[in-house]
Amino acid sequence: MAKRAEDLSEFAQFASRLADAARAETLPRFRAGARADNKSKAAFDPVTDADREAERALRRLIRESFPAHGVIGEEFGEENAGAEWRWVIDPVDGTRAFCCGAPSWATLIALERKGAPVIGVIDQPFTGERWTGWGGASAHQRGAERRACRVSGARRLAEARVSTTDPRAGGYFTGEEAEAFLRLTHAARLARFSLDAYAYGLLALGEIDLVAEASLKRHDYAALVPVIEGAGGVITGWEGEPLGQDPRGRVLAAASPALHAEAVAFLSR
Image 1: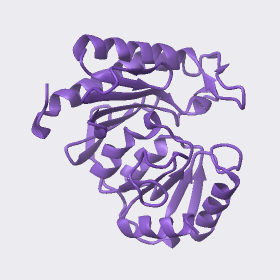
Image 2: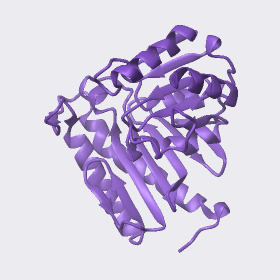
Image 3: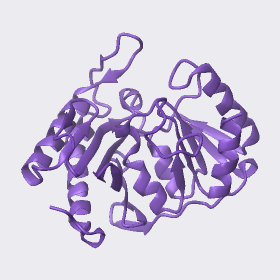
Image 4: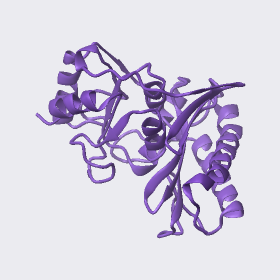
């Protein structure tokens, strides 16, 4: 069943329902001594019951409501490959923050049509914040308060507030990527770290101007696109290419085309 752009409201409401369902699984486990298992042999890559049970809950709801839709999730892979409509979910983006009791983790939910994100949700259950982007607009909600999102519009790196989750080489960055990001921070106004997906929500609100990351997968960035673009921002790979084309999973989000172009020049040197 194809949907016109003006009919996406049904899917947007369902995306909000998915975020509520994820909250019911993640929030009771946050700061409650959640056990973290390591799913990687190369480094510590934690996964908790909050990750697994929330993703199971979301997959059940999607199967019940839209059985023809595809699903990509961090923990349990892909279903209905090749479906026109596909949900891309990451119930706990920032599991390391979750394990440390830091409220920078988020639930990420995207709906793609033919591989292009058309709806995005960034949800932070502990602070009660939710960003939703679709139809060329983006909104932030906390409790009963809801407002339109708008990026700061910062145009110069010298005035920019920049962020990444982990600036160290050997984490998400290679040595060369870490050096490139360090050059970026030296040219910027200030830098803040360890914000995970929350940084993109702050960018949409105009509180951060630039985010550069690497080693991201589709479930890490698909939901960010409608939120950032709906707030007037720019989000691409480090060389300005569409997301998904870079095998290193590098993402660059900026508050204006001018700032984005300057950051691309720094990161590609």
